[in-house]
Amino acid sequence: MAMKMDQDLFRNILIKIEEFEPGKFIDGSEFINKFESEYENIKDEYLNEHIKLAKEAGFIEAEFVKGIGDKSQLAFIKRLTFSGHQFISKIQDATTWNNIKKKVKEKGLEGSIDAIVRVAEKYIQKKLDE
Image (cartoon, rainbow, N blue to C red; front, side, top):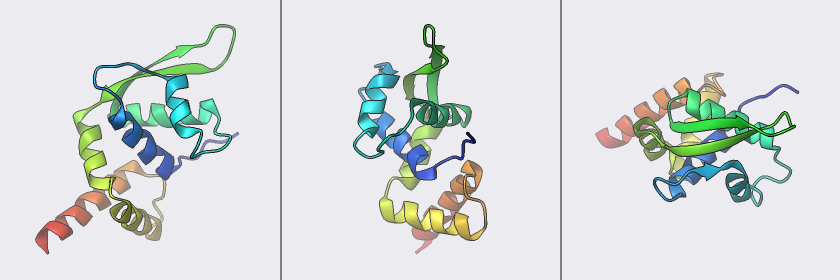
């Protein structure tokens, strides 16, 4: 099965990480429980892939451990990085987020975190200049 990045899930992962107590490792099962009400039938692997993307983007610190006798991996999320906090501050507001997604989609760049970051920066700058 191909994995396409879900921008809303990516954003929600970061927002939920921000809600956890600082300095506490977040294990995958505890984290998945936060998503069960919003995302019916979300697969652990799909969620873990988005967590890996957040780590690769430099927004979080996390470790992944293979399960015993199993192909799945457990995510242990350590914290949001400075870049993660900066990104969330730009996209946390739902109206702002929807405007940013719309602009990124218009440009045909859905799934590009770089595009989201750049559009968010321009959107925020425009708001500041008003």
